[in-house]
Image 1 (spheres, rainbow, N blue to C red):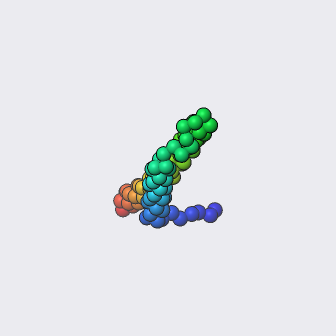
Image 2: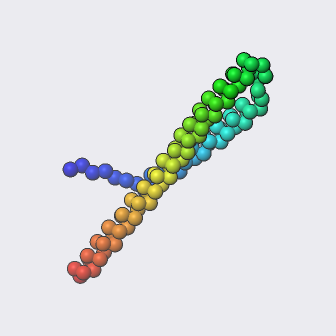
Image 3: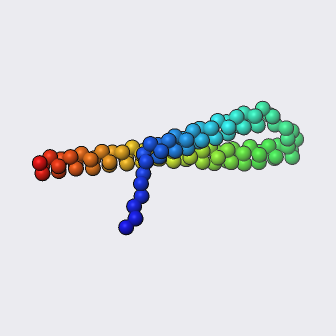
Length: 107
């Protein structure tokens, strides 16, 4: 039977890095949105420009929402990793306490 070894500190550090990556991604997304809004409505106000504007606004809002949700999911995955590290530490502590209890009963 093969086993595996988990180092909670490294798992937690990796989780923190994933959380930071998600935050940086969201920051960059927000900067991109602000930059795009800074261009105004370059498609014009005529009939064709209005149609282009409606299509662009709907499509870009949908895409940016999807990307934002993906960035949030990345951050949540990092939080899951840090929680996993906490869980491994707790299991190790509980096992050590149980062994000490058994040892105490055996004398």
